[in-house]
Length: 121
Image 1 (cartoon, rainbow, N blue to C red):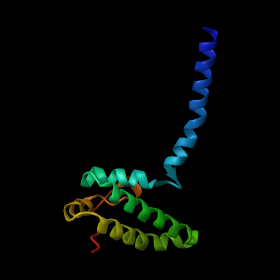
Image 2: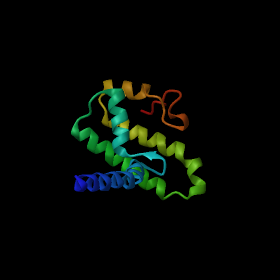
Image 3: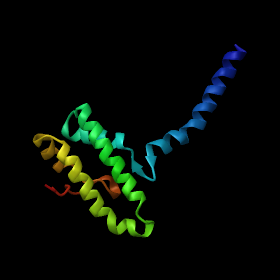
């Protein structure tokens, strides 16, 4: 019985210690992970194929890499154009039906939404 209590205490302590690391993994710099973005897209447009997910993940990874190459003081100025380019690339991976639904998705941003995204063809 005593070993069970010790085990339970160790597990609880481990969960408490791991929670901040899990949260940091989910949101790096306040941005959703590519997986979270793909999940959001799937909720809006329907299921994505494995190939689409792979391509979209690569697009978001490339976008994050580009953003890190921009000086912090220039990010605000350049972020809009970079996000439009990323959305254009993601849109190109989708089927025409999925593109319509993607275009209708609320734009991500402060407050989590507001307005429809601009269609860049």
